[in-house]
Length: 207
Ligand code: SF4
Ligand code: SF4
Image (cartoon, rainbow, N blue to C red; front, side):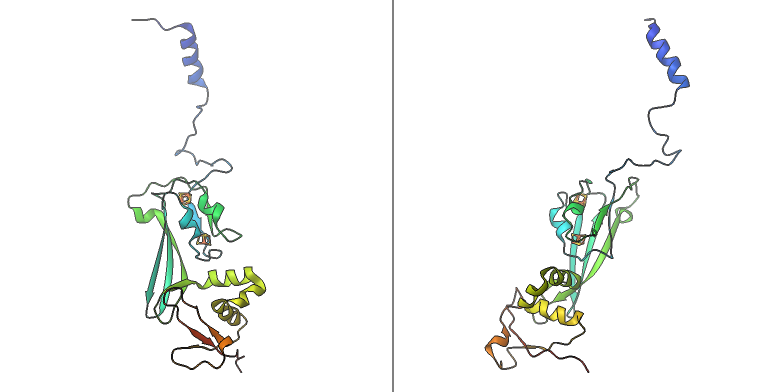
């Protein structure tokens, strides 16, 4: 048997009385370092449901599901921690400020079932009243209108939203049923799928 060298004996003795280099987790709580990239979390107050985070996610860890029923729609965004590589692209590319999704310092992600590690956020959808195509979420359209400022008045869908946010009522009628009064009143493209024509009549303030 080879005899241990003096240096090795010294190292063994020193390690007996010195603190370990590793942390004592899980015996003691672990505090992640500054800038640690842990589980991303949606902020339902800030998220507008645009889906940009899902588009840029390289591992498809964010799922976007649109459910339309009886002319009403809901968009659900779900984050799957089991697919996430914690790259931070979702937060970096989120369109709103403060961010609608943020990386937290949560690192303890061991679960028995996948659904325990997922979380979702829901947004109301705007759908074409004729063909049911999804136009966007209510909050995303409002966010876009605010971002565009006066330019928003050049888009029929955004006009309607701006009127609603001012608590004004606008009447939108199908140009197929009602004969247009003036050519300039007709917005020819309102739905990107069915090219539904709509006639916007004069705005009315509710009495
Ligand atoms: S951190 Fe990266 S992998 Fe995880 S959800 Fe965000 S973009 Fe996708
Ligand atoms: S607002 Fe941000 S978090 Fe919400 S869907 Fe858009 S990119 Fe994702």
